[in-house]
Length: 97
Picture (cartoon, helix red, strand yellow):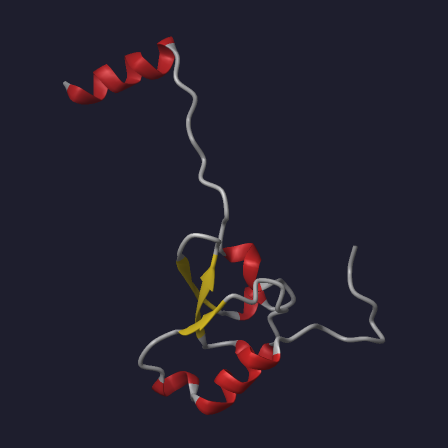
């Protein structure tokens, strides 16, 4: 369910403070955040964030295509594990040779 238009997008105050301190062109290291629910706004374009996924920080560069989405959408929390089977074993053997 999306947020009400009269409320506007949610921007974490700590992320906003960190963005105000640093110019995107002069960034030495990414802005580190746990705020996965923070909405990406046009002012964030050009910044690099490190978004926590529960275990580690994933680096996310913000461009125009990501505006309107949440930071957490680009830092996956689950790892995909392939299911094995006869076909998977055969493919694995072919790669070895």
